Image (cartoon, rainbow, N blue to C red):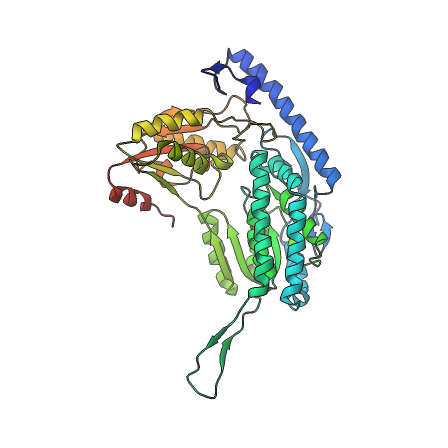
Length: 456
């Protein structure tokens, strides 16, 4: 799409320079209309494939919210409503838990080989539907289609892996202290697992949690993000087709606090697994204490990328861009800070900025697009807040630093130099397409700066 809206300079396409504000506005409207057509076409194709599910799943049955309330699922690239899905709460979650609890009695009694075969069939179906699932991810989450299809392969690999690990759930033999005793540890499934997943990787974060749970004989209640529930629903539809029995996997979405409280308070739920913010993780850990549940938490991060003076400049630039701008910077492990040694700092900053300038922004369905929209308006406002804070404290915006002319939640790929450790860009996750460049002198200083964070 950038080829249509860009001016040429030095044979490179730019997505930021336009003839006039009026022509820019006209071009933006035209391409927003085109993006809406892309959305409608993708939704129609997914409906015909049977993968666009619009109800929750409880006990193997597709179910509306009991009070008939719904929430909109929107395409972040256009703001268009894709579908409405049920806004579920405590009652639906309790029924999903009961279904999972009943299914656990039979699923946990299957042999390891039987569970393995079901998971392997699920993996095969995920791969067979890779392109369609990728389109669904792009539709509701916004990432470029190539990245989305890559996520499907990545997410499916967890199911493949745990299909094999299901056969290898070994116990332990412990040397006894008495000659007439034999001591051993037998590992058994804990029961129902509550899996709460984020919007940035709507398939992979589900399969990474559900795969091991099913492999060892547990059953699951999934609470996907209300921003991206459609990928979860499509994935569990394929799990049913694979022969995973009704009730073994359930999906509820909607009222996050009610669903979360129901999962935490139920004595039938024996484990909570969550990927998301540290603040929510703390609440889940505290809530799980009441029924002494097992808890697995993947929370906020502040990953550094460190570039030394003797680095291969081209490799460093390529690697840093991949680490920073994948999924528009909306990644838990992306390079939130880029630390560059002072001897190469200016060369790196110039080369990096030039390379970032070539990133094409647009609807993820369009050929050649490397950066899609942010997930919603709140995400854009957070990026703006972080940049304003950095500039007010002396940082220099080398590139971008503002909303993209395409409108909606598109944001220009941004490079900021002279970033200091006291700025929000250094202290917290920006979760957007903003690359902060920090300067260091020695290896010891780089290590100190890298570890100067509340994360990890």
